[in-house]
Image 1 (cartoon, rainbow, N blue to C red):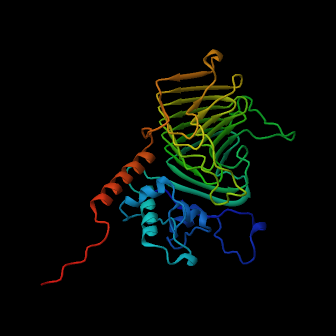
Image 2 (image 1 turned 180 degrees about the vertical axis):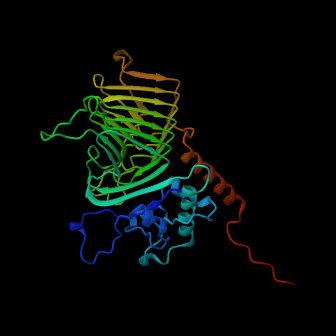
Image 3 (image 1 turned 135 degrees about the horizontal axis):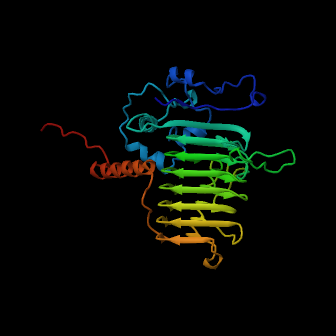
Length: 358
């Protein structure tokens, strides 16, 4: 059964003598921890879980309609003592989130990273191949370098002493990430960054509600493929630290250099363009059978057809409407929200007091 841990991962040098923030937990200790012992250390994680007030992402809000019962023995979060007066609805959000992660035919593990370190990703791939399947990523770090670390998943070649990327020579394998059936959110930066010769294969995922770009591809030799994936509502900015964090207004998918191929995807409701691949010499984009809808600026910016670097086939492109959900993560959220809306229409707005006997 998947394990969950909600921890704050920081340098010892940054921790004061009286700091009681939980340290990273091993899988064994997380398995035996109770829900009261696994607490978020700052309001950031409380906000993403919908507890104690704060901003709710669209996916978190949709979880309110789920059944709050859970037979899982692994707890995820609880409110700290400073927030003991949290509403019953907040508790329902947490219970619903736990149920969605650990019940059903395809249970999902949860990985949270919250750190004061500058530009620290939840997962960094520098060489070899990493397979990620069935995981929910919630990420927050300090800093604004959304190219070199401020992302939930960072696929980037290691640097040499001269500060230049070290290219993998056979039989070595370039940094490669196979990301399948995952739900990815970064509250401080980008969802997934693939640069400097990295390779990413993304399928059946939901990349959403990130502060910056959902998927970024850059650097010579970089390759990214994406199938049956939702990239929605990204570029909302660092809401926790708007003055020093990443500002609002980013694309769903941005290809600066390298090759990106998108098939049967949903790129919708992002705060800048849906997809951008502007360079006619260094970027190549192939998009087919996808929905690109209701993004704040242009829906797509592609290299000209004369350049031979932009392919646009059988796509549904519109400045309004909603794209069809592709991943089971977004499908579940939409179904839950619709059920909750139907219940709210059927239920009276104010409780009716019983009639007194005449």
